[in-house]
Image 1: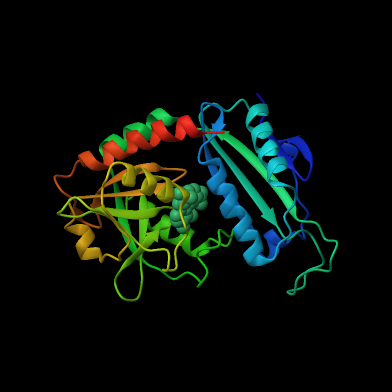
Image 2: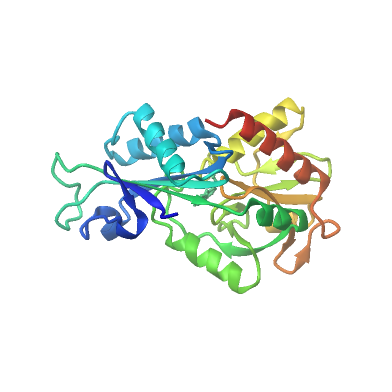
Length: 287
Ligand code: PDD
């Protein structure tokens, strides 16, 4: 079946989908994005990602391309036309196409909107989670507004590539003080000796992860303690368990950081339990 992309009001075969060569997303990374997992044909954490999209657009003063309801309609229609049951949908909104010039373009230039849905092999992701994955630490060399989900991801890409070349699945970024900020495309977590969850606070220069937020609500219901306090690489290495969260990874256990094995080298019970509870919750609440 031919894949279909949504581009500026039209549903087009992916192979023919195009944006302008002077799109500001292409020339300046002047745009934002969101990524939802699709569970049973529906968007997981739908509202949370839409909230963050609106915030990212507002922080950059990019016009909202359409109402929230219309946008959700486009996302669902893109999922439907691609017959995705288990997979993802990616949405990108840029400041639009205009003659190359650094300041914002004149009023009237409309944002560019692209949505792409893709099926995923959840069983291979599940197998990976059952084994746990390795992460590689890398210096955090990003800009100061990582709370905005922009398409300017070069430092993230370089860190992820370094991880892959080292045989690791993800890179954990480390700030100048030696504390882990987050992953290159995930939020970083540990379980400490007392069984408390720890992840970086939102006052730090990190993305406000939606999976992180849902997991926090879940942890509160389970009466687990969550500490939003920085942890060092050494603390992570001696933690009972470690994992990362993202719409693309759900909750993925970490069993190795650089060359150090975490716990007994197998995914911990807390990480696995939270993973399975997250799935139940996300499926139930998907839109
Ligand atoms: N990445 N931190 C960074 C830097 C991210 O890029 C992401 C998501 C997260 C997790 O956020 P959420 O739980 O809302 O997905 C944290 C997406 C999946 C991506 O770039 O594809």
